Image 1: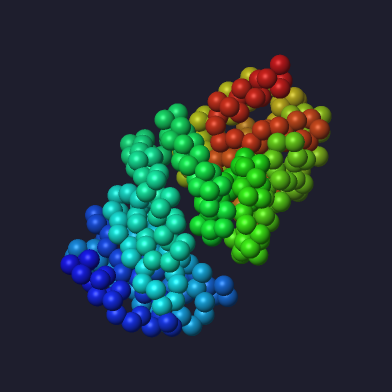
Image 2: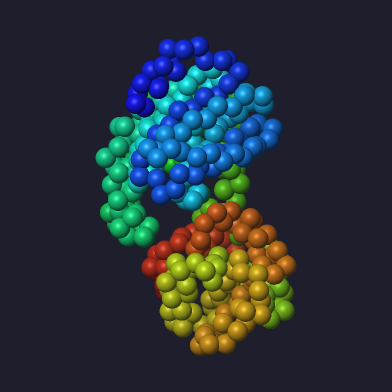
Length: 351
């Protein structure tokens, strides 16, 4: 039935002033979809319902030019991104259990991205299966799979330097701070006609910003008050090593024992190594109560005055946990979310 609908649509005349999407998603938890139209000047949001077979239809007047359409499903936990072309029907066919494998056809960008997905299909499926079975924990197997996917993405970009899809793959797979060398290399591979692409400009700006917090850079300056009312800045840690850890009480992976901050704190004197916790929690009173039961006294900054957000931004923190190891000269020596890696670096530097 779905194929018949698509055939009829493709054989009919599509209005040049409409964006048309015909979709089917199996195994949806809910039939409600949330659609976000991303424009160059403004965004719009809509809600629609699938039928019992997971079929849905989107038709929107062009009006303001739309750069992408994001379709959220399963209570907004998953998203499909479509790059629309006015007057062309985009077909979506996917399984809600495997969002990364969703086929999106119609328009050069969608077709090329789907071509890459099909080449990486086995790895993308394995990645999803591992994440589902390990609650997203970063296992060695998952690291290896992600490495292979990034290798395929890199090869695809090099083989398709003129395609906007290559720009999107750089953004998706090479946008972490540790990816700066690879992202810079891949951006240089792109054809000259893509230099004014909005995503390329954004990536270049993000790379310049990310360089401010890579290993070897000077730790960005900040000045805040901890929950005890003491002024804290990088000057507070002169002549000692220090760690700044970005956390939140509701983040299980952010617990001090998971990050091995407890062991680090007990094994090294505070005169030689200090630890600053920066929490997104905004209730200092509750945090003080929580700390009363802790055998270690932590130097903690919370977001009661918006100050944690300021440090998050200066240190380019987009996920948690996130930890920086900084030396006596205020130079960043390591950025990691892995407690074992953090402790090993601390032990090596302070040996």
